[in-house]
Length: 119
Image (tube, rainbow, N blue to C red; front, side):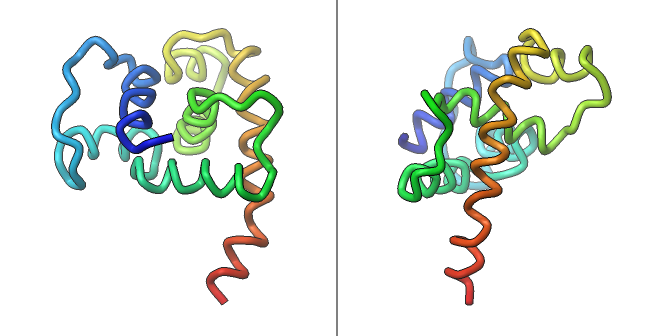
């Protein structure tokens, strides 16, 4: 997954896919939209995705779109199903939960790897 592809998928989740993609540099509007919505930069999202792949902790049949759903969910933590559906593009809450929790668990599995890299 490239940073450009991550921006494009992020725009899809944010409901901004029909708009022209702006400049992809840190602190410019495109980057700020991504960070506000998902809580991390595209570079960090791609790095986490790559690390999950390297350490064999990606869920079965992984899709970057579902990973972005998980990031957005953890950022917002919607109070109810309607808020969950609204925050993630109107998708069915059962479908969203089906895909986000395996990614949240996969991110948690990186805990030992990331902590050991910092020590």
